[in-house]
Image (cartoon, rainbow, N blue to C red; front, side):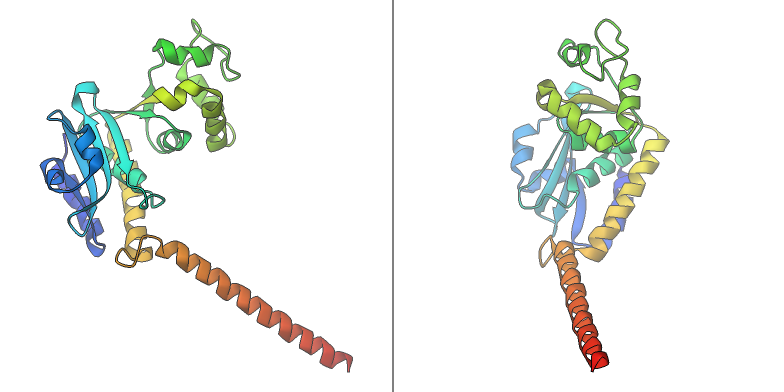
Length: 246
């Protein structure tokens, strides 16, 4: 399932952080409730761990369901793009096509915006929301071709269009949009670019010993510093104007 050499490449990129990718049986030794719930002998697993034994985020591939994937990031650790990072790691290190049922518009945006994919809209439940939907023209037996939907979604603000589509169709929130992410060199290259970008972010902007939100704190500090400088400048300008009037 996994190309081990590719996982080693990623761990080399993470070498300057306290993070590491572990896979399959290595994950069994790490406490992760999501793994216990989903894992079977027919699943493959990737974990993003901190300090060797703390699981931050997990992605699981169910080989009994056409390599359908499930991902989970623990509460308190979200907002660091760990799900995005692990999806990219999975695409880069997998030798199979993958199925992702995108149950929210953020996941759908991530896949549409970054990876070559297709969607099977044969499912009757999914056909319901394409029949009379405002996006549903043209239609084939009540189900529009996915390419037509995609073209309308990307014509304008993709993320806003996806948000609107998900808000209008309850079935999407429960069943998701079934993306098939193609196993090819193009997707592996795109995945590797995401991995490099986020690895650099984790390495340069985050202090994992001091907490996961150092980047956000630094931004706030910068804003405060800028505001203080502005106030000083304004006071100086006022004093200068008063002197000039005298």
